[in-house]
Image (cartoon, rainbow, N blue to C red; front, top):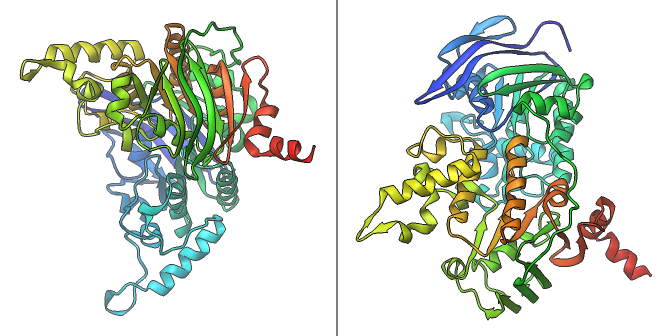
Length: 504
């Protein structure tokens, strides 16, 4: 890391209607440095990075690259200066191929402006090999999984010699194997002298990759620390002003009647012969690798998929859940994995999103009752601590964490008997995550039956009374909170336990 910064931000300020998003923020990034940027959702991280990428213009302050002041008016100008942003929310054109997306706006040309497809596919083929991707340059992006779409987003950084690379929550959808590849790419960029800004809510990644950590709080600079000289607790205090209890929960719970009883449930090749029970007042966690069948079970219970075998009993009665509307009528709610694509209408305001699933109850004769809708919004705004100037705020303008709280509030408003949460804290900062964990436990104490599906082992261990480990569409083992350990759970979800049993 050299003495002269590649990038310097000086006294940056940015306001939106009703919100001071960035307030007098200064920081510098050096060549060959991974500089982590942390903060709660709504702290201003993404806004600051969008200013760097030319998507927003600052109201105050200046930006310098290699000592020279620059004004970045558009993303194309940012790219020309060597500033590349890998977005948290995918910015791909799903109708185009992988190759076209990676070189969007900069396709190699032949005479008369024709696209040089041979060169394009050769370049992209080399990039995909480096990223160890199992798809081709010709693949339509819309046909890829979310994780593979994220790899396409990451591939864009390898098309240019970047001076500043910004990674905004790059691992939110990636498998463990894909994370290893990404971390190797980041280390290669660092060795080549790139200045790297890394945004993540995952502390293990921050302490593995970064050299320094800058924390934003309520749009202001809260502190900059050398990673080797700090710890998670100090960083957390800078972010939220207090320490958090991150220990496992192994307190005893008193479950009530069986709300959901599943026997021999199958859905083609997605999952087979799954049996489990969820009682009132308890949290059952599902843990497994991507593709293990966890989300597919949730979708089947919510009427999005038709089972091919097995039975479901809900509150003691056999049911055949024909549709999401049927599931909601029974008292089943699903907070989906992808909030933007499955949980929200981004163009609507906060109030309309929260009342979307209970719209019939908002009626006053032939018209909707604005006062009823406002009362529901205010109830969950306060309960979930949603940060927004008011109900009129468009949901698409909220931070990821506050959007997730809107989704949770929408489904709590239906007063479900069974609440299924699929990746409930994906893309949420550590403070909001702790609040949602506390909320899950509070709901269980209130009598809700809850299923939590998560790719984060600490989360599953933190909130669950029982944990179910899945591997390749099968339920491998069920643990109580008292008996589960990280080693046992890893063996269950990786097939190691199955191989041991077979050999025995």
